[in-house]
Image 1 (tube, rainbow, N blue to C red):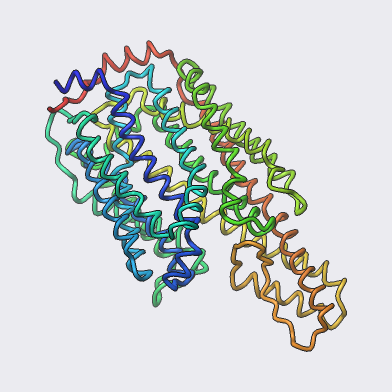
Image 2: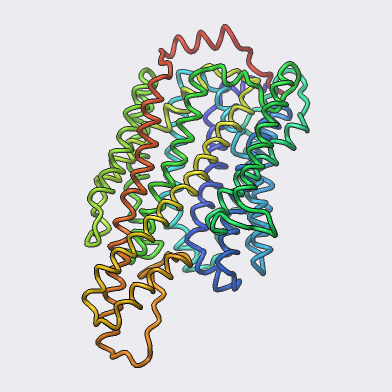
Length: 546
């Protein structure tokens, strides 16, 4: 009976998996819009609000490999359902939070739920869909991801404005319950056909190592890459994480003949290895693209978070519309579509970086956003199709966890690197612009004007609508006309300096994408028939359990 359900209703199973993915992605983008309301209601500090965001990311990135392996042991359908339960319960706790600490803990639990959900879809889809149909399946996944990005700020703004920030979490309760019930109704229970054991030593080492690296990269900027507690510094935490992760790899190498947490066999397939690196580059580049662009919309153009989300909407919209075309072409020309997609995405980013001006408006970047969206449609569809082409079903869970972890690690590294480049470049440009503009002020006001921007650069720059980037405090005896002139010049200094800093920051992301495009040339192309025959000859399918 289960075999018939598997063959006759794969699209229903895909719909359920997509609903779970959509819920986690939508919640991630909605939270950003609700931050000001959370600050006001919970009286949260900036550090606490950062942990509301980072606690989710930390738990998510650290547990992906382990949860993928658990999917191999207990079945991806069962782990998917368990993740939905954890995520839904955590959403309820998030909505009921009465102080920042409760919200941070609930968001961390949400990250755990999302980490359990994320790796389970890939092994199920690679089993119920033949290789020649996977391009279309991943196109649907990519479209839903784009839709979540598109709807996040819009839906979040509507909910927060009309119902309050708590309802961005409460809305997950009926969706989570529905997804849980549908998972047992339509998603087949796939098992590897033999018993697996969990490598607890590997779990402990991988979790500890990733925790050190991800924590250090996420929190490095906040601690100015210096001391965190007592004598412990951010570089030491990251270094300790790297050492523990190296020990993890050594232990895994010695356990390859038993039941390792990380089977090295997944890296024997060239396509899988190349695609993990491409996804890491994309994780880096997306942060490098959207972080400065979002700040530009809000701090330079003065848009609200809601309006900034709408201004970026052409990019995910173009991606959604072009995913079907990319899927049709990727069925035969996956490698070439991927290389072209990465290149178009880089060109779209370069267009925006080149034409960005203080005088730009919200529609100035539409051509670059559309081109970048078309490029991303040519990335997500073939990259997963090629990564899973020759993937052994018994390794699908851990392979999914690894590829998701590496992509998330790319995003975390990107956040740290892009944040550091942007802040350092902005500090230098603020000083230079302040010196240049101060010549328009009376001589006694010039030095305090420049010093104000130096202080702002040292103490950190906040982002917000109409942000000037300064901490200038004017004496009470300053004439109103002079004070107005100083404020106008201060705003001009910040906006001009940010545009100057935005270009090299985005250039770093562009270079990473172009390197990924060159690397993607090393992947193997092939016809759908070749892939199907190779998969049929070599790898047994997992058992389907009623």
